[in-house]
Length: 92
Image 1: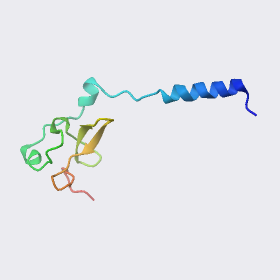
Image 2: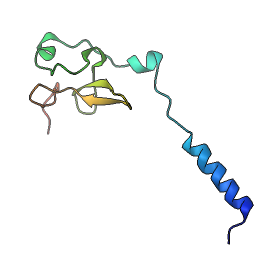
Image 3: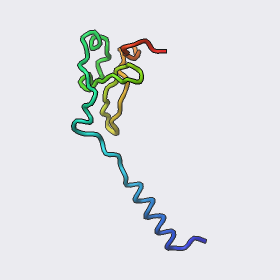
Image 4: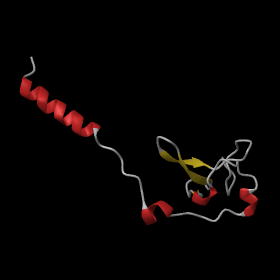
C-alpha cells in the first residue's frame, strides 16, 4: 500500500509538470529565415496563408509559413489553391 506522503509527493510532481507550457519564440528568433516571396509564388499560393511569415526550409527546399490558430502556432507548408506544396526544387 502506498503511503500518504508518497501519494502527496507524486501528486505534487504531476501537478507541477502539468502546469508547464512551452514558451513561444519571440523577437529575432521568430523572424530567422524569413524570405520575400516572389510574385510567381504569391500568385499561386492559396489566399488563406500568411506569406509575410514565409521561409524556405533547407531540409526540403519548400516554402513554409507560420499559422497562428486559436489553440497553437505551428509551421505549415505553403500550398497552392489545389493543395500542392510550393517548393524551390523537385521533390522525391
